[in-house]
Length: 183
Image 1 (cartoon, rainbow, N blue to C red):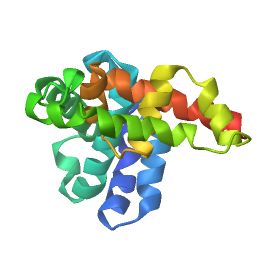
Image 2: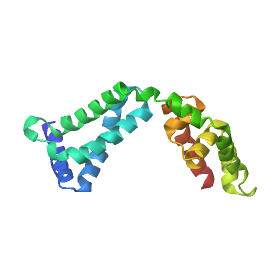
Image 3: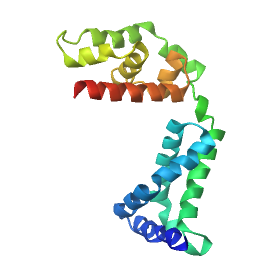
Image 4: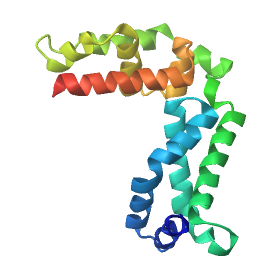
């Protein structure tokens, strides 16, 4: 078991030198376990994946701070994920809705209608139009608001009055369905 713990030390050292292969090896070997750790804390898979992504950025930028004398590389990496997950809970990212003063701007019906009209202006024989039409209304709205209107996920959540995580999931699932349809 100790050999497994020490295997990540050289990869962290590679990260500290700017070698992306070190980060890739850590990700390939540890991402699944780290998502499980984060998910136990935040209790949502989508949020856990976001936590791990942020943690890997931190691992990459802070790898030079790891010292083997203070503990195992695996423990250091797991602590980063754990701390990111706890910070996510503390920061309230589970219910991140747009602020009320910003909501008024988003409720501009004219802008929303222009975004939705862009879908209707697509060529009637367009594959994209057919694929967007096959999506349920909420996913279609979310995708159009993000990619035509340029709204952030938080702004979309505020506009549709749903939690941020739900918005992200709907958009991600909608894009997956859109990709499959377009293929």
